[in-house]
Length: 135
Image (cartoon, rainbow, N blue to C red; front, side):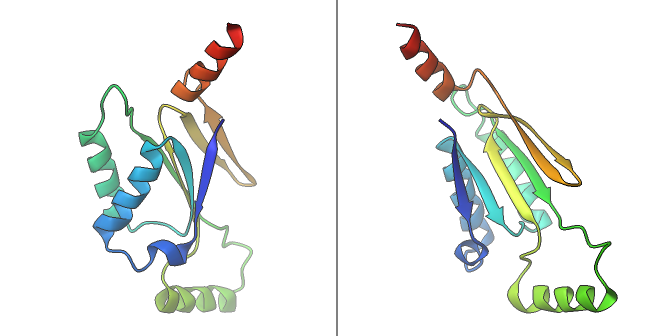
């Protein structure tokens, strides 16, 4: 079974960068896929990848990360200005961040109208369940 965990922006917004990264990494290490409203700062993304690389082990294979941005080409100039102003006041809530454990998520592809999440057939959870069914 695959578990998705939705993280609303207001849940991570008050956290420091280190606590935000640790919270997300803890969820991913529990083999859940994070779907987060908004996005991390560029520095936080870099830190998340660096920490992940340091913690790779036979049990934890790493992460797959993807950020989906809303299509702004259909917006009027006034809508863009309003959106930029809201981001300054409320934080960067535009976009959607998906983070999954590499043992479960093979890759994440973004297309204009959809997100494709490819799963590994040999993830530990999948192997356990399929092994039980064969007995």
